[in-house]
Length: 90
Image 1 (cartoon, rainbow, N blue to C red):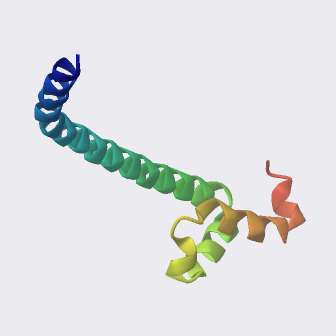
Image 2 (cartoon, helix red, strand yellow):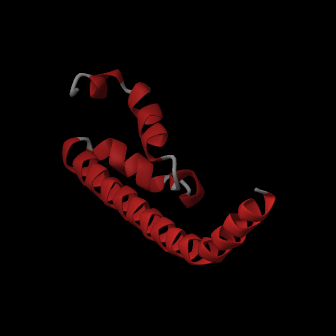
């Protein structure tokens, strides 16, 4: 029984590296797709704010670049909350 277990274990060790390499490729492709989707969503959101709420978009564009990375919605919500007249647009 122990010999059968070690045989199965060695066979599994042979299959592990190729499948792990395939999984890594799929993970990298998935990450690239997610990043592209986030960038596309960023562009669409920025275009929408530029056409519907230009003052908010201008405030956002004036913000330092480090605040714009990954904080798009919070950095738009804060300026909107300071201007109640903009909230009526929603």
